[in-house]
Amino acid sequence: MKIRRILATAVAAAVTTPALVLSVTPAFADAKPASQTQEKPSIAELEKAAAAAKAVYDDALAAQEAAYAVVEVVMSDTNPLALAAAEAKTEADAAAAAKTAADQAVVDAQAVVEALKDDDTAEVKEAAQAALTKAQADALAADTVNTAADTKLEEAQKARDDERVDALRTLHLAKEATKAALADKKAADDALAKAKEDAAEEGEDDEDCVPEPKLTTVVTGLPSTVVAGTKVNFKLRVTNGTDKTMDEVYPFAYVHATDKSGLNSLDDQVHVQWSSGSSSKWENVDNENYMDPISSLKGGAHVDVKMRLTIDASAPAGNGVTFVAGDYWNDNGSCGGSPDLEGYEFLIAAAGTKPGKVEDAKPGPTKPNTSDVKPQSGSSSTPVGSLAATGSSDATSQLALASGAALAIGAGAVFVVRRRKAGSHA
Image 1 (cartoon, rainbow, N blue to C red):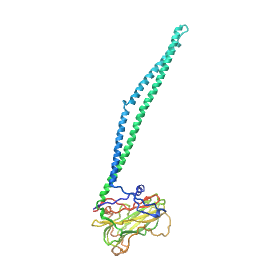
Image 2 (image 1 turned 90 degrees about the horizontal axis):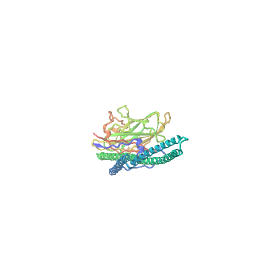
Image 3 (image 1 turned 120 degrees about the horizontal axis):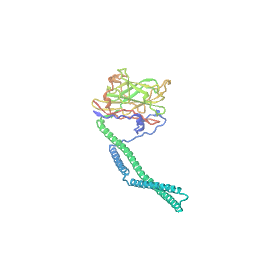
Image 4 (image 1 turned 180 degrees about the vertical axis):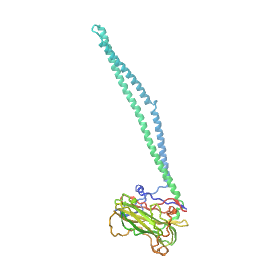
């Protein structure tokens, strides 16, 4: 039977992503912000958003194609401004050639004047001087025409180049808009696909799993202060407070810690392990998988799981919290679990600290229902002898229950407290 397990997001992602805050741990701050909720969008809303994103992308793509067409036009040699610039270039070349010829005529006329002899007639001298004067006048006029032609060419080329630059800039902006619209479209499509996938998974027998407040988990022996560089042993008691046998019960534990500021996670330096009563081997609690199942926990019975908390010596002083819960799965396919998580807060003291005698960590506001229960098989402290000794069962990836979260005040970091993912129960 296939059902859905929701994976809580990683702590770092939870800090930046709006989340449903179900409870607040007061030991992490002096003040409590109001709980925040965010309603999940419906598939219809996501379909509407995806359609809108597609329309924006289509428009952006059309604008990009239009910008390409404009660039092709303005870059063509037959474009009006390009033709005007070419015509101005021809005129400027002609004016420059005329000016060069006029300047040479002045040089030639000046040479004739300088070559006159004293015995040349007055008529010869006057003719040479007149030719020089005319050549100088022609050169001045040619220079004026050349200057005007150069100015016209510069203006024509600037107008052509400005048009080309504007077209290329418009094309660049159109490409960027298309790129952004495509990213938005992909995000909208992915969100819609994920929502449909989740809806399909949620529709597969999730209704069989129900909250069971009488399945409780209680931590005993966890000190309220733990010194970095040390190990502490404690127990997790899982109790079936109902009057019915639970065929398989899955204990769950999650630990999260920060430094005193609440801004920096110490999760990599805080480690939790568990061990069954039939084995001396310690198994890591990796915050993703349940522990091995407890087999056939009778109504009113409990089982103790051995736990161990280790904090690296390099860890700074800070705050920690251990969350625990329990889920069950019966052979007939029915399932459920504790609707809330119990949070046990503890202080982290720097390595070498001598805290002296400290009390045990206390649970959060939700109190476990442990009345009228008795140990498994009548024992007052039965170890987890029925825990599977061959490693985590594949069934741990099929149990479906509501996830919980707690807010670490200060930075507003959201604790990941239940890990759930899709799978199938054999």
